[in-house]
Length: 221
Image 1: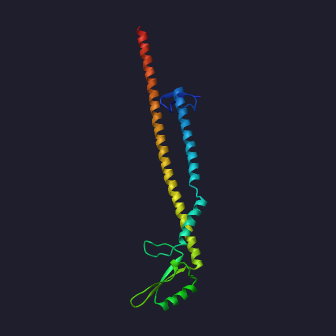
Image 2: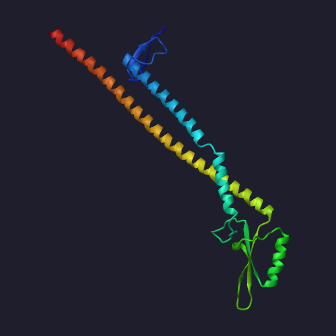
Image 3: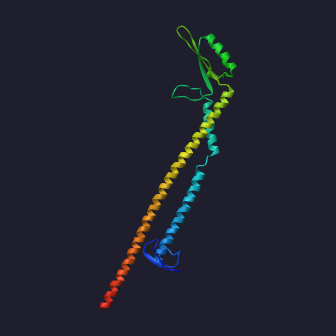
C-alpha cells in the first residue's frame, strides 16, 4: 500500500501513513481527538434527552385544559351578554331594552316563542326606567338552549386554541434558549480544543528546538 501524506486532524501537522483510517500524528493528538469525540457524543446525548424532556413538558394536559374550559363556561353562565365595542363578551343572559309597557309585553311574548326563558334571580328581573313621557323596560332573559350549547362549544374551542398557542409559544421560547445555550457551549469547547491543539503544537515545536539546541551544545563539548 503506498504511503500518503495527510494533515493531522488535531494539530494539522503533516504525517506519512499507509493506513486510510489514521487521523492523528501522535498519541497526544489521538487522545485529544478521542476526548473531542466523547464530548460530541455526550452533547448529542444531552440534546436528545432534553428534546425528549421538552416533548413531554409541552404536551397538552387534557385535565388542565378541561379546568380552563370549565372556568370559562362557569363565567359565561353567570354574566349577561355585552356587545359594547371593545368590551364584547358572551353571556348566557341577554338584555332587551323596550319602550312602553305594551311593546314590552309584545316583545316578551315574541322572545319566549323563540326559546328565551326568564329566571327568578333578582339581578335578572325586569327593570323599569321611568321617563318624562314614556317608560322603558329592560328585559333580561336566558338565551335559547340551542344557542347556549353553540356558544359553550365556541368558548371551549377558543380556550383550547389559546391554550395550544401558549404551549407552542412556550416551547418555541424554550427551544430557542436551549439552542443558544448549546451553541455557546459548543463554541467554548471548540475554542478550548483549538487552544489545546495550539499548546500541544507549540510544546512539540519547543521540544524539537530544545533537542536541537541540546544536541548542538553536546556536539560542541
